[in-house]
Length: 357
Image (cartoon, rainbow, N blue to C red):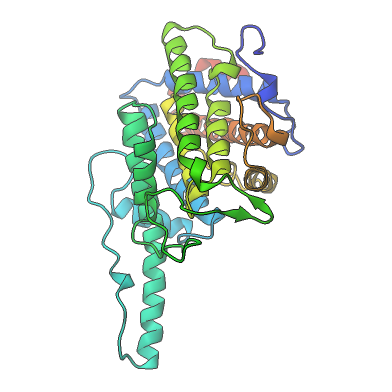
C-alpha cells in the first residue's frame, strides 16, 4: 500500500547499490520536481527551455533504444536526421524516404558492388533511426496529443512504422516476418521460450486493457487532486515500467519487441503528464544504471514477465526497471532545473531554492 499522504508504494521499487538515496526519498524528490514542471507558465522562457530539453530527451531516448539493439547511427547523426526530417512530435511532416537501398545491384564490378553494399548498409542504419522516430511520432499523437487509450491497432501500426522498409527477420516457417503483425511461431531467449503465438493477441489485449484501466483511474484522481494508491496506477513511473516490462515479456513480434516496449514506456510517462522521455539512465553516463536496465531486459526475456499488478515483483525485475525509470527522471528533471537556474534565475522555483539552495 502507498505511504500515507504520499501515494508511494514501496513494493514497486528496489534499493539499488548505484543510488545512495532510498526509493521513497527519490520518489518524493521526483514528485516535487514533477509538480514544479507542471507549474511552468506556457509562454515563459522556462517553457521554451523545457521544450528544448524535451526534444533532446526524445532524441536521446530513440538513440539509446536503438543502441541497446545495435541499431541506428551515432547520437549526433541520429539528432541530425530526426531534426532534418522534422520527426519530433509536432506539426505533420512527410514520412522518411522509401527504402531504395533494398534494390539489387546487377552485373556491377567488385569495387562498385562493395560501394553499393556500403551504401545499402548506411541506408538501413539511416532508416532505423527515421522509422523509430516516425513510430514514436505516431504513438505520441495517439496516446499523448489526442489522449486516447492504447489499443491493439495503435500498437500494431506503431510496430509497422518502426520496422517498415528494414530487412525482415525470417520466421520458423521460412517466410519473412510481417511489419505490424504478430509473430506466427515460437521465439526464444536462450533456453526460455516466450508465450506461444496462439496466445499473443489475447495477452496483448489483456495487458493494454489493464494498463488503460489503471491509467484512467490515475487520471480521474489527478483531476480532483486526490491521491491514488500506487498499486492501482497512481504512480506514473511504476505503471510505465510495468507496461514496458510485461509487453517485452510477451514478445508479440519476431523483431522490435525491445524498442516497442521502450516506446510504450515513454508513451505511458508522457500520457501521465511527465514532460519528457526517459533514456533509462543511459544518457546520464551512469554505467550501473545501464547495467541494471539490461538486467531487466534479460529477466523479461528469460522469465516471461511479472504477470500481475505493479506490485508483482516477477523476481524483482519490474521493480528494478521502475527504479531505473524513477531515478532517471529525477536526475533529468534536476538537470533541467539547474539549466534554468543558470540561464533564467528569476524563473527558478522558490520551492527548489529552499530544497537545493
